[in-house]
Image 1: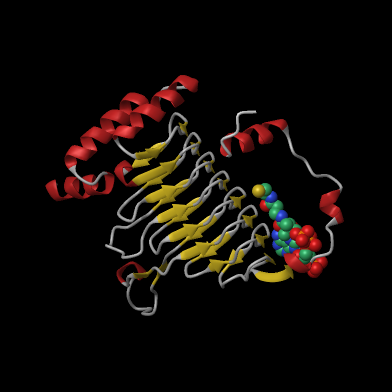
Image 2: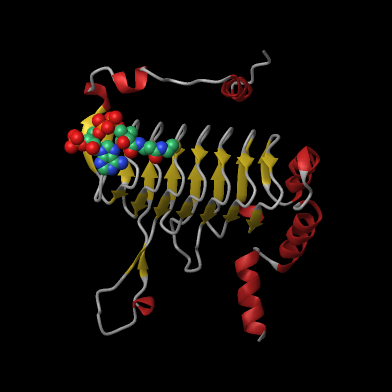
Length: 259
Ligand SMILES: CC(C)(COP(=O)(O)OP(=O)(O)OC[C@H]1O[C@@H](n2cnc3c(N)ncnc32)[C@H](O)[C@@H]1OP(=O)(O)O)[C@@H](O)C(=O)NCCC(=O)NCCS
């Protein structure tokens, strides 16, 4: 029984005193609704995690191993976001938004050497994204994901058909997404893959091999079908491009402007 409790607690925090402090602060401030709750959390959560400026954390965000989480100034964590920062930790860069029910889980229960999740500056992770960071997931700056995108930096070994897969261990090499990539809804990125700078990955693709910079890649498995640098002007897009006042305000706040 005691072993089970110890195992449970080791998955929740780096030590028992840290567990008590984190649970106390999260219970006290984690539920408070409205902008008041957002402001109080931006102050109080400094006691349990690394905050590099004002952040906006909605009520009901779940933070586990909080002392391994770093958030840059202006980070937004929506309601239902779940960050589980086992050894290797989670770092989210300045101005990045993480939307409703997105989960970043380092999932390092096996002393994996490269585990961890790093998301760069001014990224947008859409709703219901999942990042599993066993092999390390490194996402650059200005990366945008649609809803239900998954990055799974791990594979189960299944070489021996006579033993349960769960007993055969895992491999975990890591995933890299370079700057300025857009991944459409429902994309899955598997372990060992690098997606080159400036690429667009079409909705529903499964990325199983490296994608060269500035590709548009679609399908299962994802294959580059165009190079953005050699595309003719995209009349489809030119017809209806939308920018809004709210986006301008956001951009100004990210660049530190006061207008
Ligand atoms: C990839 C995408 C951006 C289109 O890019 P594009 O440069 O305009 O490409 P085209 O529409 O000219 O398509 C090129 C080819 O890829 C195919 N294709 C496009 N999107 C595809 C997709 N998601 N899956 C499979 N094939 C796709 C097209 O059918 C076309 O094939 P063809 O040459 O055999 O006719 C778009 O189709 C897409 O997937 N958008 C994601 C939308 C989304 O998830 N939004 C969420 C908001 S964050």
